Every structure is written in structure tokens, then in C-alpha cells.
Amino acid sequence: MKRRLPATILVILAALVLAAGCTSVEKATPAASKGDTLFSKAEGEFAAGNFHAAEKLYTGAYAEYKAAGDAAGARKALNRASTAARMTIEFPYNRTEITALIDEAFPDLSAERKAGFLPCNRSQCITSDGEVWYFSHTIQNIKSHNMDLMRKATAEKGETPFFDQLEPVALAPPVEGAGSYQNPVAWKGTEVLSIPAKDLPRTGTLRLWIPLPVETESQRNVTIEAVEPARYVKSTTGTGADIGLAYLEIPLTEVTGDYLNVTAQFAYTQYEQRFLIDPAKVGTYDTNDPEYRKYTAPGRNIALTPEMKAKALAIVGNETNPYLQAEKIYWHVVSHPYSNVPHVRLNAAGTPESVYMLETGFGDCGTQSMYFAALCRSLGIPARAIGGYQLVPGYEGTHFWSEYYLPGYGWIPNDVTIAEGAEWSYNATDDERYQYKAYYASNLDPYRYIIQKDVDIPLVPDPGDAVMFGMVVQSPKAVCDTCDTDPEFAMLDDWKVTVEKA
Image (tube, rainbow, N blue to C red):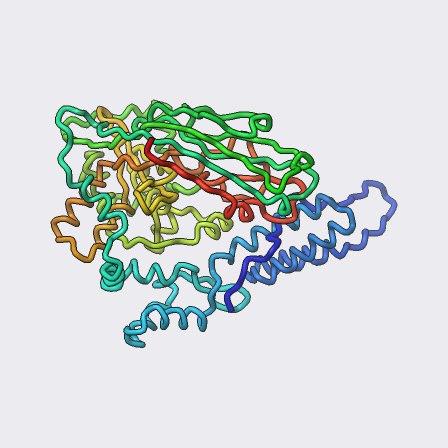
């Protein structure tokens, strides 16, 4: 049976406070409370990898702590319950269920071929509570990893997403004399967070971080026209920051209507990027420059490990020119078929996304971008995973891509994920596929909305010890001091972004 997200995904915070006597008089050890007992059992189940059982026990501990008036204990159990839920929520299917779904999706395939999709190194799965659970996007990933199945699907649809819309851009000649930034497109955007009042407590404070556009080399003339209700806006990072944020504090006692509505309006101009790079004209890095150090340093998800460096060296071989090295890395990453991955679990487990792709080969736009950046940084090439939204008509959605820095040229973009769309096409020629992918090695279309210049940029102000998916800010981040549910999950259905040509 498909596992459903519980109505309350519970979370944790403080530590147990132990009373310690310093006199020679013996004191009786206080009896453990029911909350303490359940919490201790939950910790044991979590450590054993029994995350479903752990979540239930943490939830029970939360109820006991709350009933006893132990606010610190309740928050601690709430946070841990949320962490346990995040370890499994993307893996809803057991082996029987995923087998049935594969049979339904691919009725014409042989039993032998379908059985080959089930190993965890072919379809991502985990073990929890003694049972194997399969990833929610297993069926789509099977298509992405098998071009005969993917091309059959696009042929039946009569369209290849992204490739059909962007091939005219990728294969068009550059504008003579226009430079690296050309074909500007003016955009206007609206963001709406509309939370039903019935889903919010009647007391306490809701803290929100709302994403906004920032200025980059390709995204210019950024104007934040409004963030409402303005009276709750405590700060904004500004358009010149590394991440665009408006921070709000909303007293929940002031929510009197049927909905709490938060909106943002903005405008900007996005340029297509086209770079013609002469390897001989690439300058020398100033390794003492703060920006160089910033973008060659390890990060939470752009990990620099001995294994990552060894892989980077194996990819580039004897090549020493940073541009040609980055090109080799791009073609290495683009050779991996697109895969949705369990971002929430990886984040909760503390697994760097770049390491996950290095070890498993699985990666979507974010993972691929972080893997590319990690390989580049391992060689001393400044690189970053930049993100927000892609605005391809009919397929708008959250997205990440990569940039690396070359002295004398600036930040060079690439988009491994959009490039891979060429392989999905049922009617493209091999030459068209290559030219399309070659375009995305060092160029970029103007259908973009940029929120952050890199992954893992800290929120401003610091949210403290709240459990959240903080590596990207494509939807609001929230902390609620009186909520019984995980607000980050609860608000996903309440968030809408519309960005249109001005």
C-alpha cells in the first residue's frame, strides 16, 4: 500500500537536561517521563534504520511532552519526527507495489527486462523497518535511462519537451557584434503564498523567507515592485546579494480572514549568453582573490573529497587549460542519463548531492550542477550551481544549472539537464543532438528566473535549528513556533509562481 504523508509531520529541537548533584548527599534519579521513554526508543529505531517506526515513536513522544507542558521536549520530538519522515517520504512503494507499477507502465516489455529495473543500483531504493522501499519517481527514471522507452513516449506525445522549444535558440547563429550577452527578454513576475487560515495556529509567529530575483551578469534591471503585506516585512537581502530574500514575521493572532496571503511582484531583463572562447586567451587565476577562494572552497553539497578529485583528474587526463578541462567535465556529466533523486532524504541524511552522483550516477538538474561544480573546484576552477526557475513555455518549473569562471571571459554557463533533452527526441538527427548539447556547454537561453547564485547560501536572518530543506529557495521557507506540522511541507500546495514576458 502506498505510504501517505501523515497529517502531522513532526519535528525536534532541544536536548535533555539532566540534573547533576554536586554534594555528598545521594539524590534519587528522577523517573523518566513517558515522553523521555518514547523518545529514547525512537532514537534507537532511527539508529537502526527503522525510520517508519522511529517517526511514530517521535510523534508519540511529542504528544506526551506537549501534554506534560514540556515545550522544549515537544519541539525536540517534533524536529526528530520531521527528520525521520524525510528519510522515507520519497520512497512510498514496496517491492510488490513497484513491480505492479512497472507492469502497468511497460506492458509490452519482457518479464526479464522488467526484473532488471528492480535492483537498487538501477532504481533507487532504501531499506527501512526490514523492508525495501522504492523511489516515487522510479517509473519516470526508467524512461529516462532507456532511450527506446523515452523516445516512444515523446513520439506518442508528438513533442519532445525542452528540445523542441529550445532547438531554434540553440541552433540559431549568434548576433554579430552583440557580445556575450544578447537577445534580451523582459520578464515580470508574481509570487503568491495563500495559506488557509484553518491550517495555521491561532497564536504564535510565522517566520517566512520569500524568494526574489537578484542581479547577475545575465539577469539585469531587477526591480522588486512590492512585497505584501509590507507591514510584516522585516528585511530584504537586496537585488545585489547572492540570494534574493524577503523576510517576514507574521503574528498569527492577526490572521483574521479565510487565508493568509503573501505576495511579491518584480521585473527584470534576462539575456541569452553566448561565449566564443579561445583557450589560448584564457587568463591566469588570482588565487588570493576572495571570489576565487569562495568558489573553489568545499560546500555542504559541493563536496571536495579525494574521490572527487581523483574522478576529476581521470576525466581531464593531461589537459591543463581550465576551459578545456571544464568542457571535458561537461561532456562527462552530460553522458549520465537524467534521474530524479531523493533530495529531501539526502538533505536529512547529510549526504552531499555531488557525492551521491559520483557514487551512484543518479542526478537531476540540481545534483548534476553540484557534481559539475565539485569536479571543477577539485581542479581549482571556480564553479557554482545557480538556480531558480526555467521558463520554457509550457514547461516552466524549478531548475538549477552550472557556471564556471574563466579569467578574461567571466562566468561561463552550462545546462547539462536541458542539454540531455536532445537524447529524448524521437525525430532529431545525431548531428542536431550534438549541436544542441554543444550549445549548452558554454551558452544559455534567456528563459530563466535567477534567485540564488549558488546552492547552500545561508538564509538571512538565520532560522536557527529548524528542520528545513535549506539548500535551495525556490519556494518559501518557514518557521512556526506554535505549529503542530512541518510548515515547509504544508505550504508547497499553497505557493504559486508566475513569470511572463513583459
